[in-house]
Amino acid sequence: MKCLRFKAIKYTFLFHKRGDVSIKKTAISVILIFAAIFAAKARINETEAECEKRYGTAVDVILNKKSGFLYKHYLKNDYVISVIFDKGNAIRISYCKLDVMNRFYQESVQGERWKDIVSCSRFMSDKLPQIIIDRLLQINSDGKKWTELIPGQIWSRSGNVEAAYDKADKRLSINSKKYLDFIKDNTGKELVGF
Image (cartoon, rainbow, N blue to C red):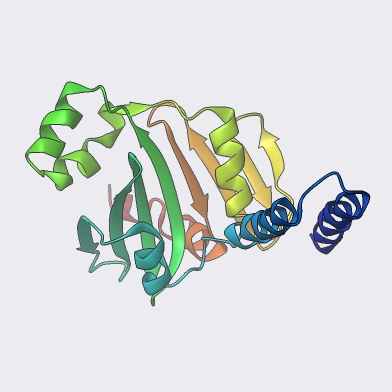
């Protein structure tokens, strides 16, 4: 990442020295480079306050008494962003792009029925294009490289973070080790005694 920053700045100033770019364009280029770098900050492990600042006020909040996890759902730029918090930090984030042409979505927005949108998002969502999936993986990379395990569906990176694209729900989920361990430890417990 540092090498990329250096090269971008180096080339920006080289062009400026040759007179190919005005000072104003050079300054804008440098600002945009740094904005892109800072925008790549990881979203997994963010605090509730950071998520509120990034996504706005949650439209739905649920405390799961059994797990102790806090579920918050946000609507931003026609996306449903669902975040699971444990002790104030995001341990799972999922992204779903809403189909703004869907009649149910339009009626729900007009009636400000946000919970309908959150709970039924799978029925009114668009498939996430690969370019969007790649961008969402990038912003949750924490500067680390994702490895694709199943093409277009499952990725992992160091720090025991995994991502999964659910084709049926049309939703990309980024899962921390803490969340994955919770799922692993609790899968099947409800079936004891069957």
